[in-house]
Length: 254
View 1: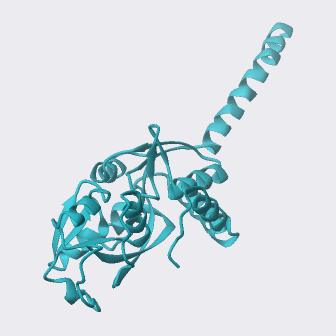
View 2: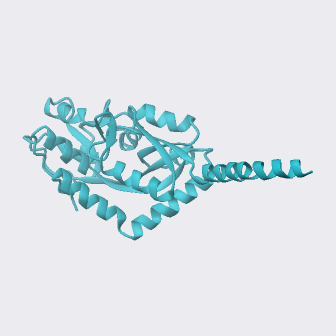
View 3: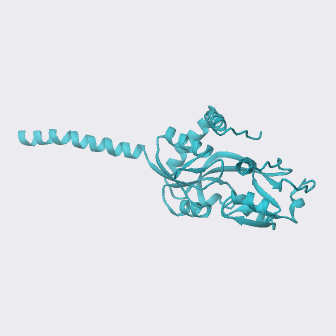
């Protein structure tokens, strides 16, 4: 019996250590994050994502106590990846009625205002309502909820692989108007040395979010939404936004 007790005493620390390790593994779930180039919110810098929403999401996951990996994919592929892979979330995607049942949502990560941007050297007159753009080909990009929304309404939408390609299409008169989030449009244009006028028509405001695999552990989503709410309330995102704007010398529309 003494030998057995000695063996159990030796075994006990290992059992406790294994239990603690298992507990830590449960406490720190791993989330696979996928995104797509969406300037200036998500930018590929030396093979890793950077940008304003990347700052938001990294801060959120760290504060929630989650481990995570992050990669950039083409927009459509990023969506499909999160639809099919457990413990995977895609960001920042528009939250729409069509997508609502496809994901579990961590929201809102970002509020975006979308407008139509004409060629900087062309006077297109006044745009007051959506019907005023029905004769134009509209530039959008694959995976854009706004592009899908306009297509569903019957507008002529020309899809590029990325939103960045639309400034070139606009300048080459391949599209008549560029339909885009206003911060993205102004930032992308500035990188090409183009001074866009403010959009004559802001036609849509979207909630942009993290869309997570539909069958992911709902406790993970609850935790992330709780922390997200806290960060909105305590001003954490305002601090990150101000730091990002200073770093890139950006001025965000009010």
